[in-house]
Length: 252
Image (cartoon, rainbow, N blue to C red; front, side):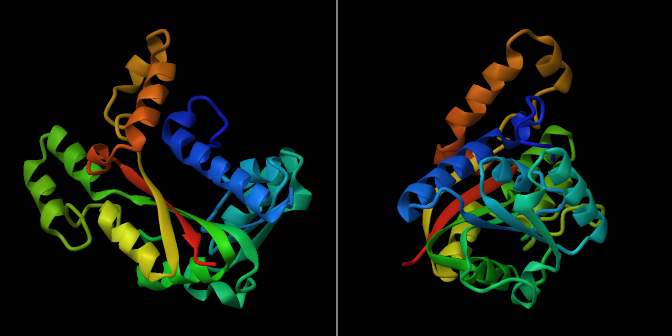
């Protein structure tokens, strides 16, 4: 995933970025502080951390990959926000071995729950890292989008397998360890002690539209972005989105 501020990449990240930015703006108003403390679990090379730091916030990225953290450091320096981005090696299940409990105004958990052994514990840790009324941004792979993609590719048996598999996988060759429905994600957030504020479908159409059409048709990218944004909040499209984004608020 690329920097959400770059136009081509925004097809994949625009919905999440706008929701996240609005949530951070609300936190600024609620706390009365211009600079928030933001935790990005599994933040890797800083796809969201660097843009968040550009807004003036302090971001701590926790990631198990030393190479990703090295790239994060370089990326933050190039963006002129090295003083506001800190990388720490670790993972969400051992989160409080490396960061403070209850020390953050917002926590990002993007592309993490697909890979952890205990998703419920992961979400609990993300929420426990928040101060009261802190914001949680949760992004995970959606089951419906994978089923639709396999079916449209003519892999009907694999599509059916994904529907019935407890982890939402279409077979042994599936590179994604786990997928979720919107209900599963909102239940995880509620059980962790946060109130679900909004659910958005991400990449409802972007992964299905031929790239050549988007790149060559005048105005196609902008029109597709507007379509993605319009469909994101509609529950009817959550079931076919490639990813699902849940915004939560820790109970005060």
